[in-house]
Image (cartoon, rainbow, N blue to C red; front, side, top):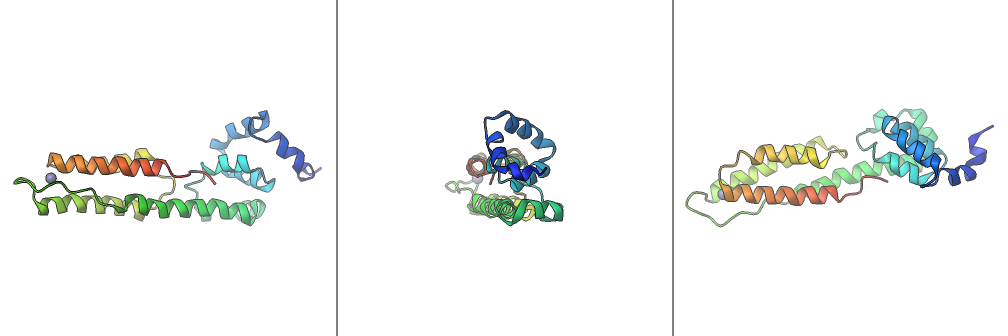
Length: 177
Ligand SMILES: [Zn+2]
């Protein structure tokens, strides 16, 4: 007997808050693609959304044809669109430069340009890497390594202020379909 025949009943049993949902959700970290495919096949949106959060780093090439066929165009598109959206959003999150502080005798416009360049290089690297699954911790570590080498205290404060803004924006982005 096909599970599909019971698709409607299944949707009831696999609704959030039900034991079967909890069971499958708990298994998701170990087998997210399996769970996403299953959920998509039976249009179990909440479970698919849960699983999608574990598939941010899964490239289209890593999705076997059989899984793609079973999940169907709509759910495949949702997953890939989520990744594309996060990549584009990362550009936005990192676009603005750290603010400059008033010029002092020790730190003029030229020195502050180096700060801007440090931001551009680091954010350029992250954008080039284009990881939709990038965690705020990884983002933080990448920038803080650069920030720690900034000599001027005021520049460093501007840099870290900008990191905080970027981290908050990145953390606020949807991680699921
Ligand atoms: Zn400075």
